[in-house]
Length: 303
Image 1 (cartoon, rainbow, N blue to C red):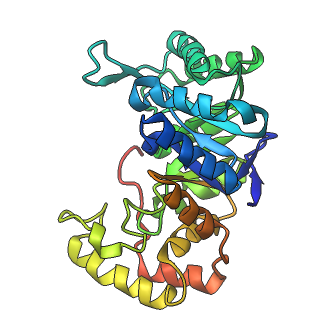
Image 2: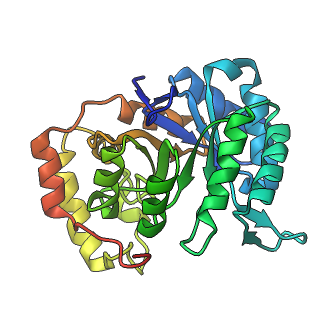
């Protein structure tokens, strides 16, 4: 599987990343999914301290222990579980980040994290303090690089100006083209990679298509619009290939995208996603056709 450089870092990430949130907490089943990803050439594994109250990090770390030097482990920080586990609060403070990283390292069973990501962020945060925490962790050798996971344009712009982030994780798909107007060009200009999530739009862009539609539609698409646009996309673009391939290749068609992170709840899903990423790239004509049939959505909030 092709690997791409992540921003200005020394990390080479596989074009398909495994989003580990969906692997579950049954250890054998989760390990089977991770091992299948490794077999398919995936070297980029994305987790977070939030997932399953930290159990996800434990399973990921244990499953990758024997190949630690060959893989890239990304985890996240900033969401703090309440003591009764009924929810979480947002805490991007330096003190919390520097304590949370120790707990993540312990759960992962490693002495360094390849990519440490802020799991959100608002313009009201003390962004300089958060950056200071990441820079210190990098200098201390606990993390190799850092990035943010955010779809807020105002937050992204601040980190581009003030920090040394190497990546931004963003939701991006054929049905969510919001990053194209301002985020993708800005990040590309500064040599910062995009890691995408949600490329299948909750299954709407998989071969299940209309089966996955909800009454409320998706983002700014009504149910009626989805019933019109999805079959049209399939007819015009996926007559001889799986629609999953079209969806993942659309993300990879943008040169700023280093890796597409997809979840998987079975080894079969991993294989399907790997096949899609390894399939034929979209032509410029196909990309233009997709863009002519779908909405060029823009971010309405967090200006």
